[in-house]
Image (cartoon, rainbow, N blue to C red; front, side, top):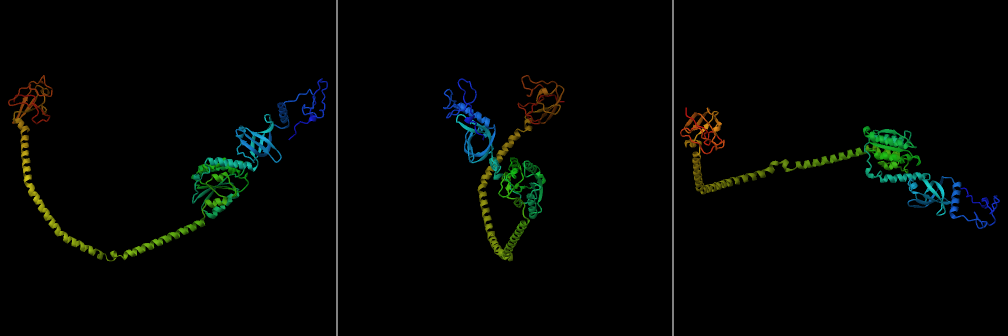
Length: 505
């Protein structure tokens, strides 16, 4: 850093009172800097603010507008703004990072961190300090990538990308597997050789992508998205995402957010093997299963034919053993059943029961006879006791029935007609209920007990004070022809009054 222009030899001497000479003169011995005590009595000392302005101007002239400084953070204080010191082995300088600039820092800042700061140098008048005002900050070298890795991991962990509950299990017998890697990568040959050795029936489909460089992350994400969209229709059961070892910069494509988002959306189970066993990437943490090497990824996903043959042979042996034991057990049970007396001499078992049944039958027959005789005697006794009462009740019921028959006969239609009633039929053969229903000249028939009388209507009119449905006596009545006081709706019975009478022909 250039020295400040505070050399007294380069400062011009103050002018004399007369102002005759404008030439610079050498400061007197023992004189102070910028008009100190050793100057002429007429010189006035400058204020602190003037001195601060002079220092600020000198800084502006000596230091460029933007500087980049590398150092270690010390005495970090995080309030609304950040205050800390940036130091190395020989020096330290105070730094201020305002809130607007602090929000742009994409990694956590702490004491002891090596960073590169871009900012401007200025003099802070209130405290008399030269401070570096920070515009941007980035970690140094590999530490920068490590900070980005940790920040992304923390963000994805909060979003649930690493939750074990969302991870899908690998298929037990995959028939078709997609391998997302570079065609020229050694990891692809490891996967192919392992798959052929373990299970030749498993088909591998290569999705050739870049696995290193700036464009690698986008190609990997697009390949995963294509598998998410078309994988089920292509019959793909699982995905292997892999590449060989390398530095953290070489593997950084698998630490990008776009790759993590694509893996999180993928509906197919994904096993990731990136780099060596000690390398850990974001893609491996988001994937459903992590493998340390590409070979281990293929071994984890693809079953081994030899192992499966052993398992099948063991299962077949166990099944045969179980069947043999079951057959022996069934044979023993059958032999035991064949030795039972029920199957060898069934008659010997049934004979005692037959004899017991015959004995019970012999004992039951006389008992039933006696019980039936006793029941017959009890029934006869009950009948003898109930006969007088039943006879009296029957006689009373017969008398009541005869009385009812006589009453019914007395009110019968024929007996009513015999008492002098009749009913009249109109020309249409229907019962005449009112005189208004017949017209002069109509032929009517009056029904009596001993026959009928045919007559012709000369005149008909309803009685003035009677309802239309009441009978009227407008026609001359024939001998022995009377009308009842009440009428019924049934023709042929005694209730229908005659509405008109006429002379017999």
